[in-house]
Image (cartoon, rainbow, N blue to C red; front, side):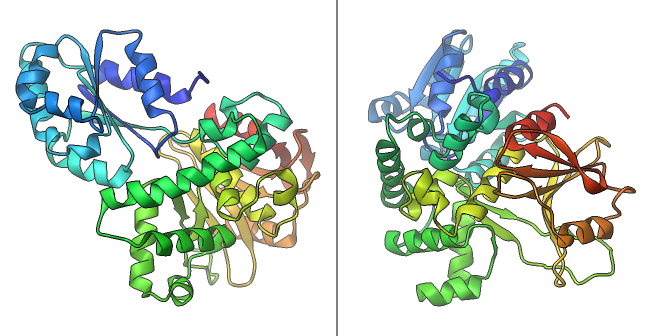
Length: 394
């Protein structure tokens, strides 16, 4: 098992809160992590996709009240949202008897959907931990390991596959299963073929500005429908909308968000790119690397970090702007898929717009190498892993 940073976060949350929600896309390792936690504490595990386990909860209050002295793990909780009301009653009863923490660990694959369900009944009783695909700080600290993570993505079975062909087959099966089985659980009927075409279009336009009307024209649906489909992909933590940075700089700023397929391995699978050579020769290579770096950094950013990008209509641009919480400063990051870091004038103009030395505490150029060295104008060239480690410790 590859150790996950989220394991410590879950343990801390269980020590102070009655219920903890472990949320993340399918097949990122939530169940594996839950079993690892259960191995070190008295626990009972129920998989709500299993009919036999669901049958045990025919009278959930009666069944769960037997395990007040154990951690109860409820996997795929979105299949039984009616349980949240029962959990609330058990938590409140347990508090009156002195049991205030570590009662329930619930696992789910839909962030917004699960938050909405639990928020109605477990407000003040639940804490959330998000588990994404493996990030660059969770693999071997070498350049080849980071490159393989970029090509194959962070889903454990994809990353650890015996060959590139096996990895690509896993990701294609993941996409097919998601479209045919998972999507119908989370909303009204959506044609799998249409959603796959949209997902593929987003991969082709990785890191591009969201233009719902243009996407709608290509799919033969309305812009409202496209927005609803993208909302679903965002809720399922498969797509990220990176918001534009708004600042009072007296410039005309881009107002549309950028859209990224969050896992670079899924980008490559959607485009049929099975290995490094195929990715390197495709026009998506630069945007794919940009999305990979952004996800690597946001995966380890301190809680409360405000993230966006800066772009003016005149061409001044910064790929990633991070405002860290607690007066820890503003970091600006330019991302280049090259063996040496190079910056264009648009980056420097954007830094000037944002106040440069007055408001920007650190400026970095992330490139494909792993050597760290200074550049002009107080910018540091740095590899993605080293910057992620710095950000995690900020």
